[in-house]
Amino acid sequence: MRADAQRNAARLRTAAAELFGEQGLQVSLKEIARRAGVSHGTLYNLFGSREALLDEVVADLAATRLGEAARRALACPGAWEGFAGYVTEVCELQAVDPAMGDVLTRRFPDASRLMAVCDNSFAAAESIIERARLDGSLRSDFTASDLLFFFASHAPLARAAASAGSDAWRRGVSFMLDGLRAAAAKPIAVEPMSAEQINRLLMP
Image (tube, rainbow, N blue to C red; front, side):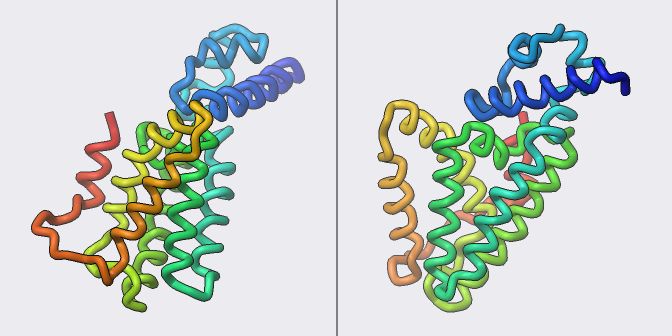
């Protein structure tokens, strides 16, 4: 790659990271190009697609942040505390970082590296949930699909509350967690969504 192309690519990565963090993953590519000071065509010539740019800019950051949250949860001495801490930490990421809020929605299936991050996060969530179910603190019928459904529905509300200067999203998370304690559980007649159904729901 020529030196000028390398400089343009670096400017585009920086602009994309800023705008994804400010507005989420669906920000206009033209706006990214404008902030980087290059043409829309230059962006496509260097990256080819939004998905390629997401894989370049967001995948590693998402893997680090979500991976650290999972590791803290699994290292927590108490299984319930680890589970509740994980849910709260991911919800906080959704509130304060629009890019992270969009990652778990799986709206960009052609961003292969980002999808791998989502798959790894789902597997980690299964381990965190299973640990809390086995020690009897989390209701036995709660699944990782249920958690992903909650995260997807929580993200836009958390972002809107945070934009309004409110931490009220934390109240919703606290109410939800209290309802997930095994002692509060009542039978639910409806089965959880399968991973395939969740994917069909979240992907446009």
